[in-house]
Length: 385
Image (cartoon, rainbow, N blue to C red; front, side):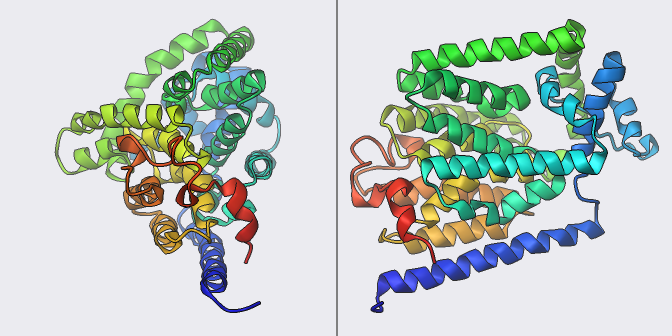
């Protein structure tokens, strides 16, 4: 093969992926701090309690003690997901802890891989250290990301898209808070109806299995959880603007001033039919921007979009994408910087006549046909090192 910019970029891409793979392996160093899957303990125990003592499901101290954590040190690890998520966790809780943890993590990566194959996204998104970190913790971000990307890929099948979105929302509803705006922007009214219908069915099933009181208890538990987040200093290490302002001693509510820009960005990205990575960043990245609390494991939500940008080796802005991706992958502990790096990708990928997707552009209808906005659907084939 003759040498040239494309060949040089293939070499750089291979080096970048090797770095990501190495960083993913190095996530195992966290074993000196905590065992693998420690965050999954609350989901596993939540499922077990829901089956045996549903009235104690949102008893924070009881759930923490079941995880082998001492309440004397003031650290609580409650189950705070909605009862609808128990349709996933309760069956898994029948397995021994490690088997249950591994089953869910394999399922999550399988959903991500299936979504990547369907939308022709880079398979190596699973190499990103943010994904490895979420898996190590036992968190659900890879599963949610895969479900949402799959949902976006089934635009012409509203019943399937609605089911996928409803499953994701039933597990972590706060991450899909912007979905109605996105679907309304595209006029996908049938998908909205199917999402609501599937969601109602899932919630009804959970109420039938675990009792309506579980939903009442969950709603009552949310304010208590917010107090625990503040009292245990979790906002000091969270990645959201609200958390960062609070950590600086400022009023975190100032972060909600971002809400109009986030809403406009989601509306614009979907109204102009932006490429799917921009839609994913607007939908899930926007949710993180207006959320009071989200930890660094949620960065895995944006891994498919970051990988899709890095795959565009024909794009003249590829080096900028690679630098942003490197920052995204290298700064998991300083998660806010990784979040910014991912959010800036639509800005880097937009034509000069556009601004960022969060300010009314980046990959809009007029842009999706231009070389700089080429979808990963056509660029991934040229990205294999």
